[in-house]
Length: 307
Picture 1 (cartoon, one colour):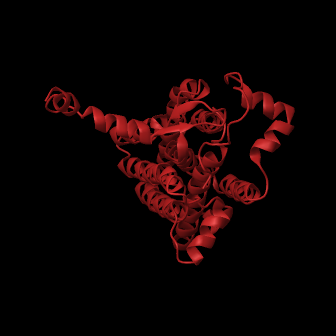
Picture 2 (cartoon, rainbow, N blue to C red):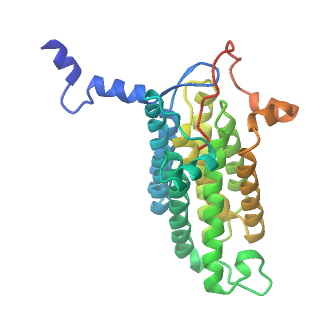
Picture 3 (tube, one colour):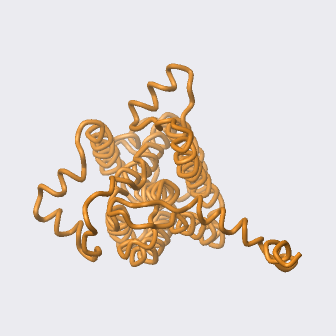
């Protein structure tokens, strides 16, 4: 009886067995062979969503939570598939190929679901801040130069691409401690500094500040290799920074960012970002700054799947 009571715990408490099961499901072995927890990513996504909701940005809070949820499904299901001898599909090309064959992978669910979530969030943001957006003029550039109706649709699609592309890129970078957090936090800080002169830009600045704070809070544990973002945190934080960029930047720079994200995504199918970083002295020093000394060789290249 004592054992059953110990497992059940006091009324209102989570049973110890359930706690261990959840903790075990979020445990991973990183590239250096060290045990880390994906709870970091869950905390980043959940914390950001809570702060966004508290700031009155409920649509953004739902979007971050949804993107994080899609990442969490990938984080949890991939090791489950491995435990059953099923090799998970990797890369955008692999997931789309599986989809063409009628098989929906968790990566394909993200590839479809994250853009849809980002589109709904982008459309809601444009509708919410439309009264503060500078009117369309003949001197506008890019999507904002189109007729009002078409321009709003095109601009929302660009916003979607920036947010979804940033979510994917953050995930692709989360293969070494601190790498994705350094990139996303640096971008968020750059977006948070300039003054905001419209309701839309003010929202973007708020998103950037929240993303920067979340990244700074998670960075020490990530560098110490106690935790990692995983798909949950990397996708959510990347989408948040992308949404901030979409609202802070004018049309021309937004299109440039979208093109850069697309190019990097395509390049990732053929080029290893880790190999490029290791071969570039300045990038290598920045990438290894603050990281623990390397463990003995023999561990694989785990981390976010980049899927």
